[in-house]
Image 1 (spheres, rainbow, N blue to C red):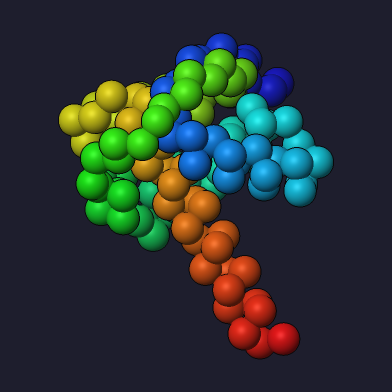
Image 2 (cartoon, rainbow, N blue to C red):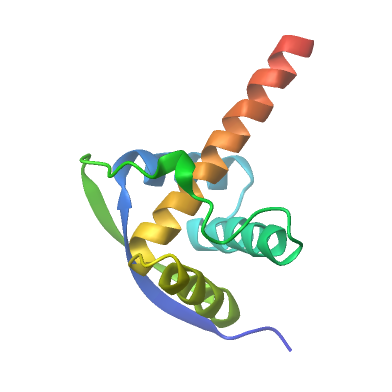
Length: 119
């Protein structure tokens, strides 16, 4: 049985939201579907010991850029894990998810840059 989806309104940096929308379009997914997959990958890495749930130093500086509220339908199990990680890191859920997605986009950019160098 697939986990139930929950509607969650997150306040995301405009740049992060634009990046996620581009990636979702490129993969022919909905934004909600893309975010769910990105967060699941993050959870898998945390649970596998690859990274710690509190290791979001990449984007630790507080962004003063514009934020946009976006309501997404995300699997309930993913939302609950992200709430737990956010709580452990003493951050609001929106801020924690924003940092995870910012890290995700930075990793994609790095992979694309490495791919271009090889070509």
